[in-house]
Image (cartoon, rainbow, N blue to C red):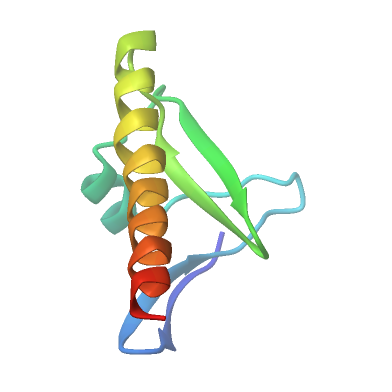
Length: 89
């Protein structure tokens, strides 16, 4: 597994290389920030042309709370912006 930092936009971003067995080792910096330990599960979501990795919730309750807080708040902001644009016209 190769690890390096690539200059991207404003800051350097940690990278990892996929092994011949399709395994990916997360850099320690990322594991620490996400609070991921050996044996923990992660969720990988595709968003357009990139993947977003998150620590999997420990329970269904946590999963619902995370879903509500992230997705619904984002959608609410989008709807508010649309309404504001309509009022400005």
